[in-house]
Length: 133
Image 1 (tube, rainbow, N blue to C red):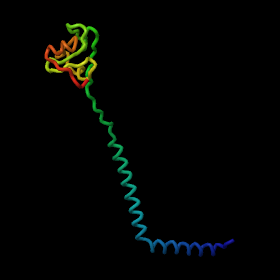
Image 2 (image 1 turned 30 degrees about the vertical axis):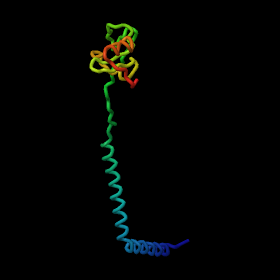
Image 3 (image 1 turned 90 degrees about the vertical axis):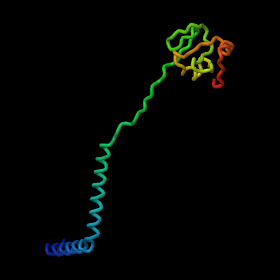
Image 4 (image 1 turned 120 degrees about the vertical axis):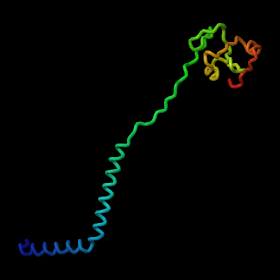
């Protein structure tokens, strides 16, 4: 076991070693501690600022066209037309006619909708059959 005197001398030597080491590496240690402090503060402020910037995602809403419903009575968008058995439809403003199930036919407004009972009926009224549908 070490005596008190021996222990004190060993502690003095250790203290001198530590002080010498700090004096030798003083400048690099100061740089290292400075870099660690700057990096830590940058991270903390970045996280704090980032939490304030969180936003809800942008949602683009576009209106949906009401579905065109065509039955045997040629009911379109809850408006009953005068002709029965509406086999083809066309627009008053256009010169093409379509089957009622065609996407182009569904885009025709009820004010402009014209009903045809057959190909012959549409052609006689000056319309051409659409090649799209």
